[in-house]
Image (cartoon, rainbow, N blue to C red; front, side, top):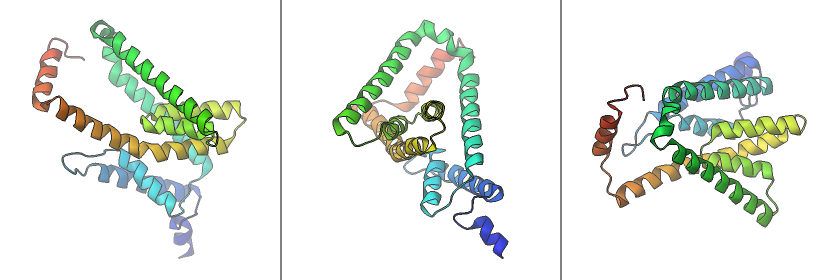
Length: 212
């Protein structure tokens, strides 16, 4: 039974134990993400929660496998977004796309200003951790991946910095998701938005453009 303990016990970092751990965390996270409470489900966000729980109990992964999965997963994520948005990306500029991109840019600039203000006012929190917090607070996973890659290139494979980013991201991400959900409820209540009517209006607007 030693082989089973070495495979499934906390602290094991072999290739086989890492694959089993990833499969378990992803499967449990996806399953829990389908459960609805009050008509709301957190989706794949539960994968992060399950990963945090397993990490709390001492489970670790092989560093080489972690690096591969992180990079490959980020590539697949960006590629999938491109496939989904690509057909309507350029046509969206004719219907308010410039304004939306300007708002997105303004949001990023404000986030950077807030992070720099916290860094200089507090003086005790590493900038790498704050970058992770910034990415997690706005649920910007690609931003975290890009920041980690930039740090590894500039700081000569300093994995401590990337771990600080991941810790900041993990700490802020759950609150970021919950905050967005609560904000949507507040906005819907203040403006008395009826979801059925909004969906009908969007479908009517998209009717002449079936590929949007």
